[in-house]
Length: 123
Image 1 (cartoon, helix red, strand yellow):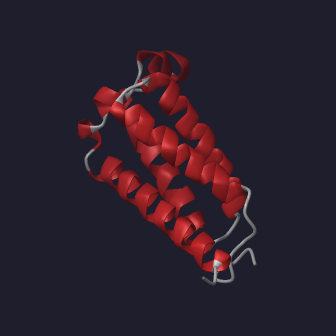
Image 2: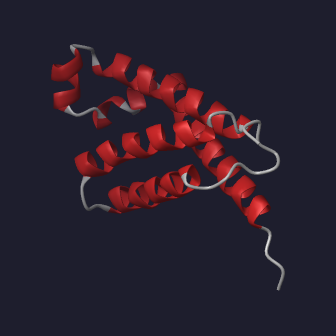
């Protein structure tokens, strides 16, 4: 069977972009639905209200999702998203959501190690 690594990287990149864009827009459109996820240490560390933390997080995820979708600085975006997810996994712990985020974290770190696909602006 013939393999298509470039197409695989493209599918992974676009799938992750859609995921982060969806979560980012969800946070911007309804931040109150997400404020319960903001840990107390994040409020103490930043001095920001949970709503503002959610809005900033949503903006970050949208910005990184756009970079992934375009394939522009995709490796940098992947590393930043992986680190972001590492914090979330640590905070959430060994729950079903934590394991899901751990798998997504692995996918974005894997993407950071791959060559840009032929449809990427990085190529």
